[in-house]
Length: 429
Image 1 (cartoon, one colour):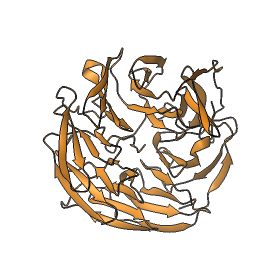
Image 2 (cartoon, rainbow, N blue to C red):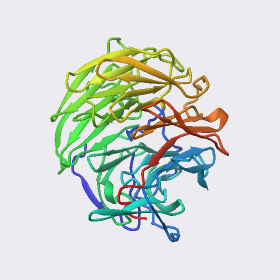
Image 3 (cartoon, rainbow, N blue to C red):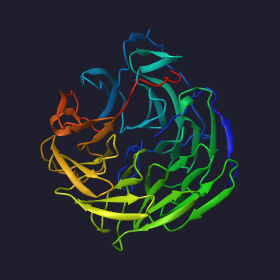
């Protein structure tokens, strides 16, 4: 495997990211976006940002949500849930935060495009000014044959091209800049993978090829191999705990902490964890859990809790099944699961107890095709946002009280969902 990093300048292009936050999440072993024809050198396309409208100064930060639909992107005010913009974009599109709290990476045909969500802050010593502007696709893109996972961690944004195995890492604060420095590393083979960058220059990435995925590799700031593990068959997804990273396997999970890998064995011979949700205030990572290797679609009724300090894995029974877009974390590290019974289940991650269940939407059935819309959970601070595609609905829930704060009907059935806060310095437009 090549180990030397290649430092490239993203001239005339915009660099992008993923949260895992979740994590956004990815369908089980699925290709995240439609493949595009390979470019000659698989480098970056030109940045052709639309003319920016004069920004409007606001009294306070204005958080916004973005949801995909079949044929475009809807931008919503995160407090009122009123529509801010409807941006047409053909194809099956996916969303990832870029790490600057203003822009999103849109996985689409040909690579990752940048969406300027149009809300940001400028700090001036002891105070800040906050602005909004119309959301726009900037025209900048990171070329990718098959745009895959994007991960923001330790102030670094790493995104993975499944079609080539190429990993690109940038400073999250400059992720949308047309001339941001980028570090590019290659995988030995193209595969559906993921990479995570650290503030010490280390990069953790998956090992595999088009037939299988076997483990993980760590490289340092000059590209030299630090360590690896081959004890994670079917490796998929990642999440960050307080001081560790967790990667799902078909027989449990692997924890990376303190410069070493540790295996968490599943209690079943086939115990697949493929989607996870972490919290910076908790040592425990929430994961899904499946045991039927041959199922076309398994509808599990247990989730996994992986303690990255005690190096334990426990399972928690739920009163309903859930999907790969059902996992989230609350402000105190609460483990949240949106069930097919229409309730948001709240789990104490340390005790492993189901604390309460909040009625939010009608009962639903997970579709067999992973690209079909299904209810989706997105959490920001103390608010949980939940979609109900069949009703073209989105609602917000106060996690402290369980009360529904806002509820809106949309012009299109919502699919993926994420957002930005508009509080941090907004990077480059």
